[in-house]
Length: 214
Image 1 (cartoon, rainbow, N blue to C red):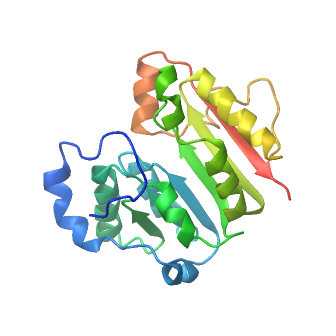
Image 2 (spheres, one colour; image 1 turned 120 degrees about the vertical axis):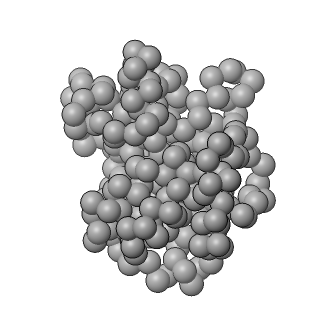
Image 3 (cartoon, rainbow, N blue to C red; image 1 turned 30 degrees about the vertical axis):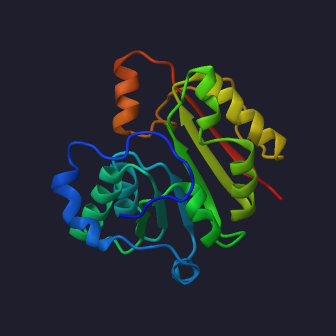
């Protein structure tokens, strides 16, 4: 397994790690040559959770190349297992923090960036740990192509507002500004394990899709 050079927080391994560890032999260390070989269109998912969402999308959309990263080893290894079992040539995941991956990704490279239900770190003293912050958005904007999208989902209202305000600061626009565009709906539903848990607990969910049109 690879260790992130940057400081990071959160759970690193889960109960399924021992069972999935055999797939660690398929892990790749990022390099610029590897990214140059990945063909367009390309979608980056930051924080792949249990690895099932990105695997299912890669299976459904074989002509799109999916790139994912997470510090949670179980999800990364599960995605690799799915990739091996289903022969998914369009899926590449890394056991790394996004900050460690970005230096290898060329500018104007991605058609879409997804950040689904990142750790909200709800306590005020911990909010500086949140994934979506100004330095990261600045770096991600360089990696995103013109007319590319950033898609975000959370069950914490203040995180939603904070992230959306950052996007506005970097001149992103919202193609859909209808009153219900940010609410849970059939069109917004991601069908992830975390989303289902949040719905079962009657949490309010928040979504946005913003466009970089420059």
